[in-house]
Amino acid sequence: MLNIKLKINNMKSQIIDTMMVTGKSIISHKFDAKLSLLYTECQKIVKEMLTDRTKNSSKYWKTIPCVVSKSLIAKYQRNEKCISVKNLAIQICGDKGKQIKLENNRIRIPAIFKKEWIDIFPSKPIFGHICSVEIFKRKRRWFLSYSYNTLKSTVKTVGVVGVDRNARGNIATVCDIQTGKVIKLGPDIKGWKDNFKNRKKKLQRKRATVLLKKINRKQSNRTKDINHKVSKQIVDYATKHCRAIVLENLRNIKDSKKCGRYTQKSNWSYFQLEQFLNYKAALRNIPVYYVDPYNTSKKCSQCGTINDINGKKFVCKNCGHKDHRDSNAGFNIGKNYLDGITRNEREFLASHIDVAQTSKGKDISYV
Ligand SMILES: [Zn+2]
Image 1 (cartoon, protein in one colour):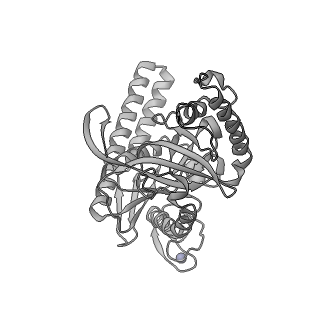
Image 2: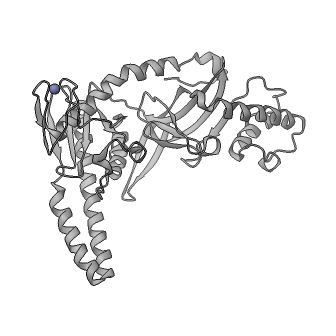
Image 3: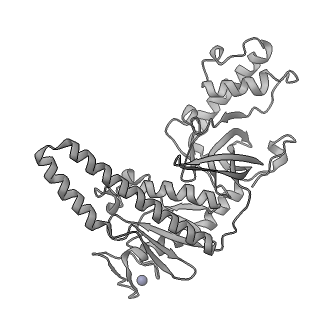
């Protein structure tokens, strides 16, 4: 168990009880060639490392990423008892997010995979950064085991809430799938956003830069304040009713182009809300899951038919279901996660291999 001192917004700090857990995922076949190449090179280097133990710095091993050579030195070369290595494991130390990036249940290791992401299925909410990963091969497949901190006390969730984020109207609509309850959070931001816009336009015409900066600052403070409040309300609800939080994954939105409603120029900060939600939820040990945003606003949450939507009212042409557009989307988001979980869990289970196979007597709890 570790005690981590966490600074929140430089305002207050708290002592939080965490524990380290390890999860495992299969690495997609598209990385096979890259990993095989790296693996062969590492094998060659480790052999040389063991014959000449004085070359114990990454500057001697320029053909592999520095972060990899460092771990090979620490794991094999400095270990006097190590004479030869059969099954090499490529270890990467997260270095507080510098070497291993984490985002919406996927990780990226720039040193090896450059800009490509790898999906992971952690069974507990990740607290902070990924501490380390180990890449290894078993029966022609590449695996990734990752360790992370999670809170010691666990909340057993008994359902999910789907959260729809908006540029217009209420900024978040929370839909409880189990009870059908809908909570609309945040003020209607359209009004004050237009107000800011008009004032900014006037100032831009006058070229009043000082005032313009002031008004921009004011707007961003207001946004931040609202996002803090809304994220707190969502996490409070989830804690009280033991719900996991489901959001749309809006990170890839630029690539997909399918989801017009988010590509519209909106200065509302979805990502700030997401960020606040993530850390507030992690503090309470509430899991946050992500689903594909495709068609969440067009699909009927009752029968699944895709409808054309106009304005804020949702009416299904198939079953006649009537709802507010945002709450219909919120229910879809929650349901999409529940529909997907069987698939994810299957993959998650399939990616699990025996503890004894990989860790040699190390006390790691595989989750
Ligand atoms: Zn319907």
